[in-house]
Amino acid sequence: MAQIVLIEDDADIRRLVAGALAAQGHDVESASVALDGLQLAVKGNPDLVIMDLGLPDLDGTELLKMIRAVSQVPIVVITARGADEVVISTLDAGADDYLVKPFSVAQLEARVRAILRRGSSSETGEPIRIAGLAIDSAAREATLEGVVLDLSPKEFDLLRALGERTGEVVSKRALMAEVWREPYGGSDRTVDVHLSWLRNKLGESAQEPRYLRTVHGVGVKLVDPTR
Image (tube, rainbow, N blue to C red; front, side, top):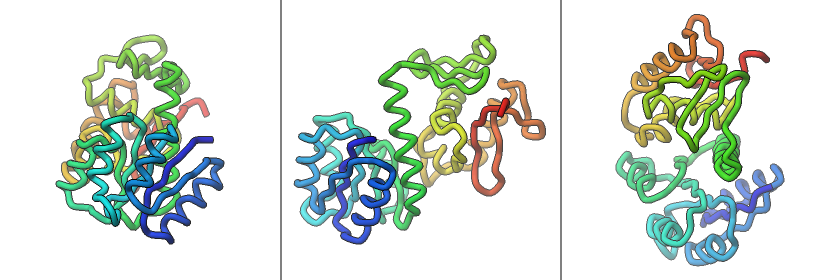
C-alpha cells in the first residue's frame, strides 16, 4: 500500500481516480486546490503525488516547482494540456510522468505501479532479475547469464524502462517520454532501431524473440522467456 496525494479540481475525475487507487489498496488523500495539495504533499510525506496543471488558485506548473524545491517525491501530471512544449517543459521541471486527458484509469494505474516499483527498487538497491537477465540501476550495468552486456546509455535506459514494467506492454510513446524525454515528438523509428540493437545484444531477433516481445500496434514488453 502506498500513500498517494491527488490534486485535482474536477470533482468527477477526483472521485474516479481516488476510488480506483483506493480499490488497489492505496491510501489516497485528495485536494481540489493547489495550496491544500502542497500542504499534503510536503507534510504528509507521500510515496506519490498525482496532480493536474489547471488548478483554480495556482497554475500546476508553479505548484510542481514548489513541491520539487523541497521534495523528491515522484509526481505524475494529469492534464488536458497536450502541446509538445508544455509536456517537455513539465517533464524538465521535475515531473516523473505525464498523462493527457482523457486517459483510462487502467493506464494511470499501470503508471502508478511502474513508478512505485522504481522507488522500491532504488530503495533496496537490488537489481531487476528476469530469468538470466539482471539490470543493475545503481551500477548502470546489465548482465545476461553473468556476462556484462555492452550497452549504450540509451540502450541501458530502454532496457531498464522495460524491466521496471516486466510483463507489461509499454507503448513506444511512453518509451519516448521516459528514455528520450520526447513524449509527443520524435519518431517510433528511434525506438525500433534501439530495440533492434538491444535484441541483438540479448542474442535474439524480432523473428525469434526471447526477452523482448512486440505487441503489434500496441508496444513492447520484457518477459521471462522461461515461463
